[in-house]
Image 1 (spheres, rainbow, N blue to C red):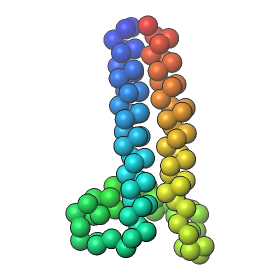
Image 2 (tube, one colour):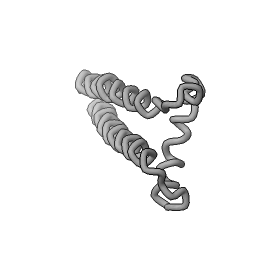
Image 3 (cartoon, one colour):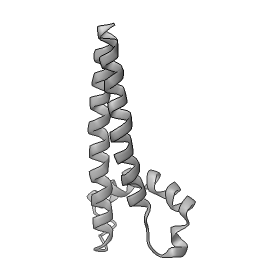
Amino acid sequence: MFVLANLIEALAQVVSIALSFYLWVIVIRALISWVNPDPYNPIVQFLYKVTEPVLYPIRRMMGTYSIGIDLSPLIVILIIIFLQNFLVPSLRELARQLH
């Protein structure tokens, strides 16, 4: 059973790192949107390609185009923080119980 416990612990660590990375990508995307970036810049294209699949559905649900303020990055950041404080500790606790 210890192998499964170690696997779940490693999964929790990978999920934690991935969520932290994506949180920073969202923050950088939001900051770059304030300065009217060059759309042909490869970094800007990467940020848009990585974040738009998550931000666009939230924008559609919230109807932020009618408000004029895009709050979708804030919503995604809150979701990431929730997952970091709920999912990762739950996986770690499950791994601890399997030891």
